[in-house]
Image (spheres, chains in turn purple, cyan):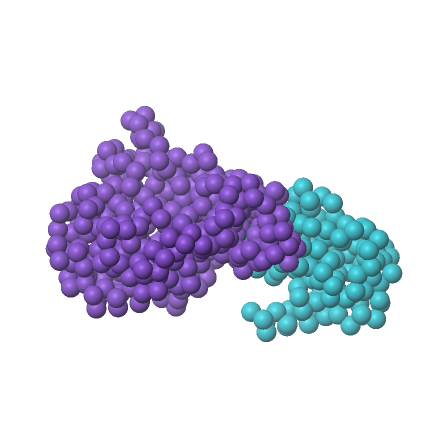
Length: 364
Length: 127
């Protein structure tokens, strides 16, 4: 298994390490529920160094990238982030990612570990000027309501002015860092891209700060599901199009990209399955692979499911026919016919992520 | 309960005779695999269960898992407290985290189960 530059830090916090797409990563430290609540109430740090980072330099590279992703990258304003996805020729999802326009000339695209080799091969083949930084950059996410204050105390001045889904480059302790106000938890938080050689120091610095606790993939998964965010490779797969995955609002229909024809046909017919949120009435959860039944007939499938610690019930994501995807519709999930109700996102409605950060939030 | 005096199944349940009833729970290994338990579905008292039949369902953050009945018998008692405090299993699986008690069990099946020493040997083959 591959190890991130932070691998040696895990043992200090009693991590339980698992294989995630060939990477040895922490599933949990203190426990999934405790870490989950830590992020909802204070702050947690995640090692996301397994993720992919690609740098695109120059107008030609950005235009070539535009022809591969469902959205427009050339129209992205400097300092802003944008969610997008890469599709196969048949419209099936290869991976999703978040772009940050670093400057007029440069754009960073952050992708996932699962499809990294395919994505890297695609860019190498189709985008002159694309540079794969994945092996050189570590990524530490700090997430939670106290994250702005903590980074401010650590000398990240830029967090004072950073709005939701924006990013910046900064120089700190001899290192060039990139920071975005983003994340995968719904809370105020930042993703810090740090050269490998500086990763352990930054992690230890943050981990030593009392309100910060290390968090693993388990809590990352429960946090993202409570927000209704899909996971690449699990909810977003090669047999589903971006339209089915509910990524409509990220599709620039006036641009060209692989799979567009298939999705136009789906859009025009209106006949396709769509990714929806499913909520259980109690703590039993729908689980990945559970069949969804409506009025006695197979209607779809659950792609993600868990107990949601902050909503205190079972939650999940699954595909159902578009006509059924209405809030309040009841389905049965899995062999025990667990009743689940279709919900509008997010499950957890009190998250801080989009809120404005005021000066007093930065004060101890 | 002293883990050394219990009997074990290959599915990581433990069982022990106590004052005429047979107490059933899951092993430390199973608890570790499941993680934090969030929901416990218990069988009805009086129900007859065959060996290997689903006796209870445990749901954790990560997964749902069946507890299989270690021996044929009749459900005499269930640990109701688990419905309110499922994480008792995480905290004390050989004690307050017991799941059910059986009566009228097939004693031959009970005698055939692994003792703690065999179970420890078995664990080495699954880890």
